[in-house]
Length: 390
Length: 104
Image (cartoon, each protein chain N blue to C red):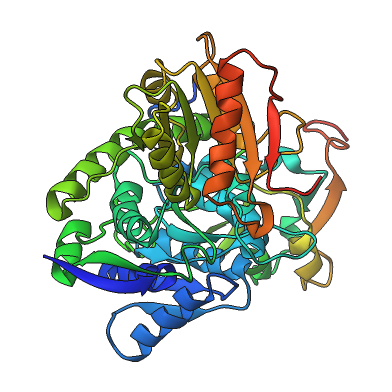
């Protein structure tokens, strides 16, 4: 049963965590994630969850505690943002390489500096090669749905990788939206009970976790991680379908918006996809054949499927809410070149919204205008900064 | 040590987990030694202080008496020689390789 409620993104994530009822949550507050931890700790205090809540002195400890509890066989969660994610850096990698199915909402915020608390994707993009599965959300509904699915994706026997559920700081985390939430019992049934195959508290079968892994074994473990990521693609798809049957909201790697007959299109992630849909609608009314592809799964990167979905679109604009400073565009732009390599597309990068800079419908329409010009053969820069003062 | 083929990525436990207990025995660390403990049985009072302190369980015993040193695993830390309380030390550290079997 779905229930219609009005929640902020943070409240929606906390609600998802309450319904998941994880064994352990270890978290440290940081803007704009703070409310998730605050609300969840209230659920703990009020006895609404059975979770062992570990208050820690830093994000490095939060992730370390999650690693310990997950290795012990407990379903473990945390949440963070930007500098908090940066502080847990080394253990973020250890969680993935030790193959622990930890779920972590990341409320996306600019990673310093100068210091800024508002939205961009620089925090998540820094962790793109850490071995975590990364899902992005357009709104509170998707953040809530992604958090619940993430548990099942992470814990799949052939995946066993941690999952980062990304939602835009303030834009999603602090804005109240109407969304459908599931019955708590239904969520419990969907996530099921977590039974680790090997865990430290299994006294009948003692194991060693995290041993020194040198020249003769490390590479094999990395190879296994790559394979698990490949398998994660299948799992994300299957779980997305199963969740769709339960709730009527099916999820895949990405979703298309008026892309079928589009001649120019944008691809991007996060809350700006909602803004972009409004821009698409306005331009469609004027008869311009524009479309949008909203990417949900950034890691693993669904290159083949993206190439297929965009095969008919000659000019594609890539929305990057992060800069790589490689002088070759944002992270999604680079990956899109890989996805479309050997095909005859023109790709243009739009770096936008850094540090929470507002990106509105007219900005997106401006991007489409540039794509149209590129399609007409006019020279357009490959890399463009949208909304920055010249 | 045998040169058998190590398992490939498809058959190894994931995440670096070691699923069998007590496997440190299979990993010979004797090659790390710079100094080796030499046992002098005539001085030994069989107090087993060395057995208690040895971090690598490399003191061999039989029926409560010291019988020798496991050089496959002894890393040569010298703790045994340090804690030996006998008037004339029953364990002394000698340079590894400085004294080979049959040499005088």
